[in-house]
Length: 183
Image (cartoon, rainbow, N blue to C red; front, side, top):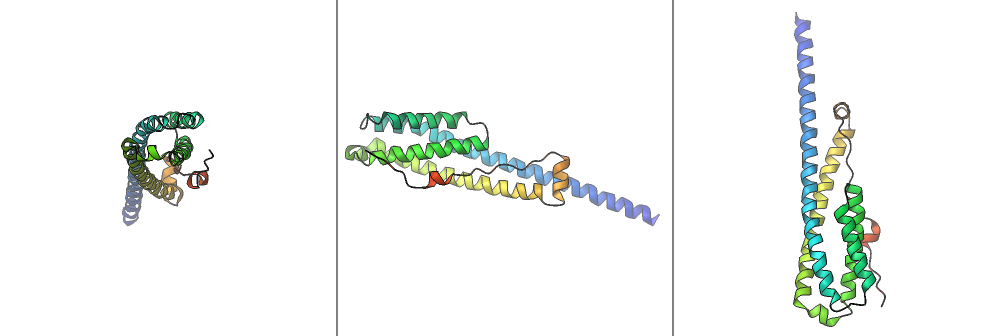
């Protein structure tokens, strides 16, 4: 009789462990999805600012056609991205294109003094900061989730219920370096 109670106790503890681990994984997955949606909100905000910024710069630097096409192409790729990896690649291209666009503005003193341009530049700077914060939060949640999915014994539960590691939202080194602009 005592052995039966011990077996039932072990089974009960095992069931509680499985439920708690499963619920923890679901909670982390939902936090990652929420963090991604916050990144998406900020990226949409950035995408909305880009055409206004380009139009403002076009008025002063109309001969920079290739640069404007690069910005438009990068923006389109960002909007069309469907995975974290695609989104990261698109964002790296957008960051590079925007840096070039803002660097071009340095050659046009009238543009640098334009209130609309200054307001758009300030708005873009604030949005970039929010994107960086959202990206950091997302990557922190992915790290916690991936650790739980890969560490024993929770990896057993993760495997049973098809929880898979998530991709980080990483910025390429090329997007963090200086921008080369030639006139």
